[in-house]
Image (tube, rainbow, N blue to C red; front, side, top):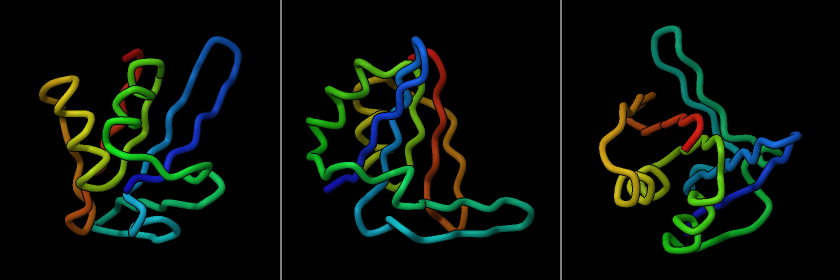
Length: 95
């Protein structure tokens, strides 16, 4: 399962998604820090299919974890994936 939260600012619809088991954790590698605070990533828990539906409506997406990133790659194709302590992270603008 995947935790998501939709943030709205003007015309932008930012979708934050994080694998449930990574919620509330921090990762650090070299100079890169990745945090998954509940106030940014948690509004509700969804399936992969529900996440893919939400991605279609988003203008910006911030995705953390194997399940969340895989759901994006399945629907949107290849992308550059950053890994921090092995945890995949993708940020996409104007999707």
